[in-house]
Length: 211
Image 1 (cartoon, rainbow, N blue to C red):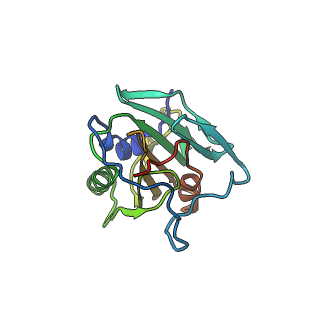
Image 2: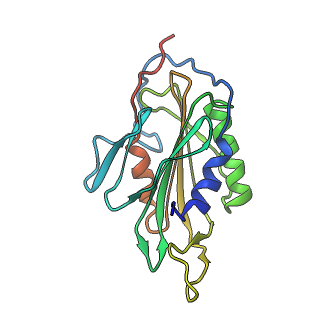
Image 3: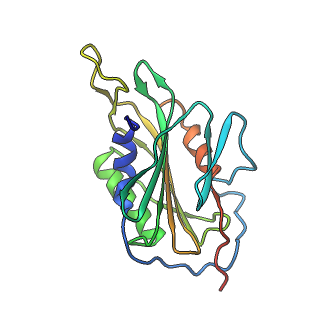
């Protein structure tokens, strides 16, 4: 079956789906500030495996399980990895959503995600941060601790149906030059460093627009 961690990932990411144009007025590739909250990785981290998804590439821990690609809406392609399963529980994962003809630009999409997370996942005082991301026309970053149930990977009569760990959750929302939007949400119950490290490996495969 698909990722059972989706109770957190889908609830976090699905609020951002849809279908009309986004703004894109970036002038080429800007320099990432040294003090920016998240920095693009300098290559693939040790122990990670890179995957090319067309609009972007991403690297995840090599022991994470890639799930079958899904299409939750006509204009959305979702690729999910599940982290290690410990005691029947998936403890981390990432959902990469590539959205063609998005309903809203990255700033509004990030704000919608923040509102959804505060309402449904126990996140508090979530403020999207505008950032610079190589080859993206617009980029926003969110970080918070979610409290969402992660169902057991293989439910049984003796297994608890769900637990509610603290999930370090990080999201990157990118508008690309061709009008595509990419939303990447990574979370982990093991380490607050893992989600940001996964997001740092996102590489946009097309140049930002100029002028």
